[in-house]
Image (tube, rainbow, N blue to C red; front, side, top):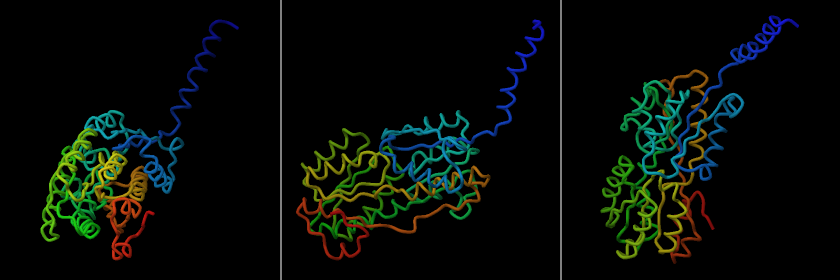
Length: 314
């Protein structure tokens, strides 16, 4: 074979794969931010992928997911969002996470955002209205923050002898902390309760709060909804049991909300616009009681609460 023929054949072999690759469709990329770590997010990610599959998207086949884990850190969200923007993702999913949702909205007005928030997304400036979001963001409103007064009333019913309640908020989540404090302080007098505020944004600060609870002999603990507290749920539960403090938390894992986030991410990848997708609002709220913990703390669950509970953990 002459040298010229060899070079020609070699050149043809080199060009062919490039041409084939150029013809392959581009796989869309979702940038997903979680307040937790991968191990703690298994059920949430499973339900998110389930929502995507309802729209025909399967991770690793026709969609890629870039995961960013906050791992309970105070406020890494602007950095995580900026990283996803540099990655040129097709849509950003912020999960049930108000700080991440606001960080994404501030950072981009062009990349679609699918959020989950505990507060009113209109007041947060994420959308113009629930029915017609109008911008580049839509998602799920879980209503947890609005239930603060109701949760305080249930805590009073569960612990009728309680007079002083500790309210734990995360100072790094200013919006949720302020709304929680406002609602609890407004509801407390009618329930005959005094509230004392405590702040914790780190693991050590949570330990310090429980040490203070013991010194002040407070009767119960009200934990504000917050991604960091969700990531430290085992620590909070164990410390509450160790110090014999009845506690109320904002909720279990929001698996159905994550499925809906997956559905909306899929619809956006299919060409729909966030501006036209109405914000989904929670339609059912569950009361879950841990009867075993109540017995350990020497509490008798009132029959009225047992009758209203959606689930009783024995």
